[in-house]
Image 1 (cartoon, rainbow, N blue to C red):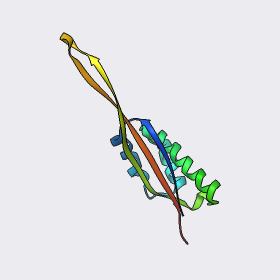
Image 2: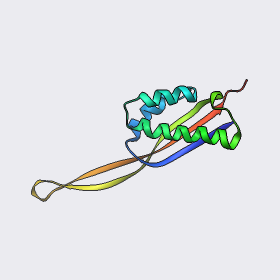
Image 3: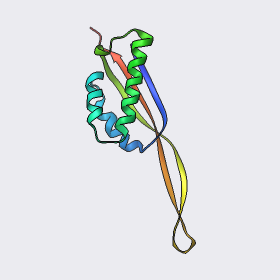
Image 4: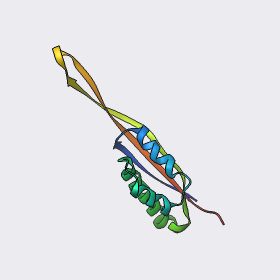
Length: 112
């Protein structure tokens, strides 16, 4: 059985979040949670929260054991960008793009 959790509109670059999602894909849930807690990337904290939510969904809604779960899929999709303008010399303005990302994690139980 596959169970998912999604967090949308998280501030941060999608490219940087994909580095973290690639590192945990295919691992067991407990191993991935331990790995995320020691990663220096800012996106690791957001991904750890989504992983915790997906695990809780599997345990509470489908009566699955956390020890038997692994990460079947982890994706970081591009969200909208907040656009701002920075004043510069001689009346010019430079754009500032503040990116957002959508993170989806799918956990599944290991079939015996």
